[in-house]
Image (cartoon, rainbow, N blue to C red):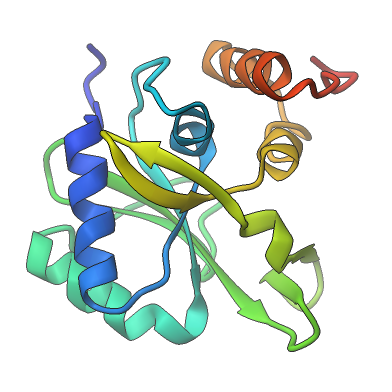
Length: 172
């Protein structure tokens, strides 16, 4: 087990806390891959989530209730993407986006926007037996490109490609 392990029950609990505050959360990253296939295929150090920026207040309140209220400085953090934690094993990599009102979503700065669609966050899966909204398989695959892949990224890509018949990216 790694130093920071996010068990399925902890991920499920944080998602439930957000939902309890009315925050429409979408699971991303490695947990999205595992949610899509309906079982945990590897250990996770954090929980990546996508949340509409208009729901930020509910997100902060839910995490404060859960004791997940400390910033975890990470190279490349931005106001729309940063990590919070509880001082122990629960770490959450937040990805905030804004709706452009036409089905497109905006992540990132005005100077370097990342545009994607509401459909990209329309996947459905399960974590620890509970249904969750997560990244669509093709979007999850696309988010595993554009950087130097680690072993866990290669694992996630292989799982997505095998389960959903997707073609592996060139840099894979």
